Length: 105
Image 1 (cartoon, one colour):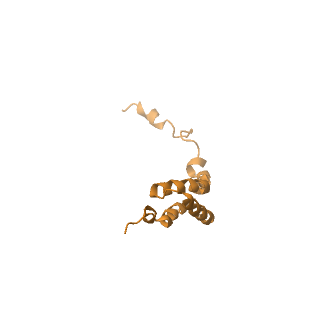
Image 2: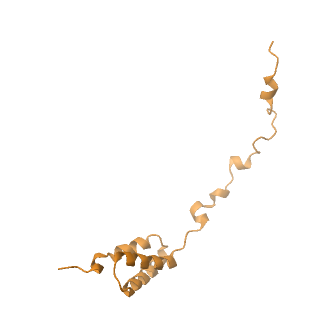
Image 3: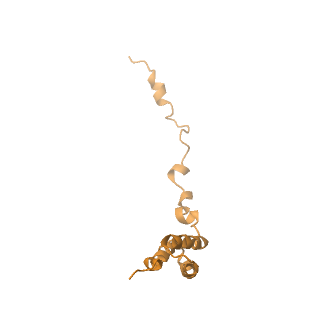
């Protein structure tokens, strides 16, 4: 007995893959919209199903804010940023140059 093309597609697995990158609060709404969109397509195939779900997913995906990814740590004080500028005048500045041409004797 030949199976139809729509039987070969595991729509549940495909929807679950797209749900992984969504916020937990959006997953239920996405799942309902995805199932509705898949039932509306005429030609059932894995590529068509993927492209349909991709468009539905784009309307639910919200990229994380930069501070959520990197955290506020990039503004944290550090010894390097709070210290004096490199090359600041120091009593030892130029000591090597002063001793370079010292007469040996």
